[in-house]
Length: 123
Image (cartoon, rainbow, N blue to C red; front, side, top):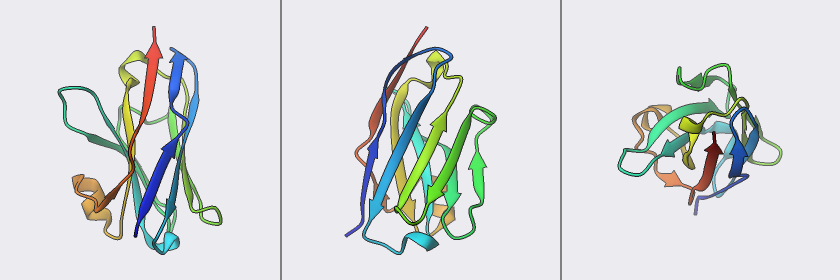
């Protein structure tokens, strides 16, 4: 059974930083795509970053490019998201998701999801 657990969310002032973690288990970690999504009330969950644990290739949405960095520690089966220069509009529930298909990650229809972690950025 695939299991993902996010951690590291919290309250931070604008301009501050947080590091989220996504600990995964139950699949061959070194050959998956893992994405970070976020959702605000009343809106759909949106992908903003992803990584291939196979070759380390990454994707960033324009809204986070240059501020967020996704990385993978295959030995620990954990994906990290370093978030710098946070803005109030980054406030959301953050989810990680995993799938053998990068296409399913990009479409937001991954098979397995974590429970989410709240990130709140105050102005």
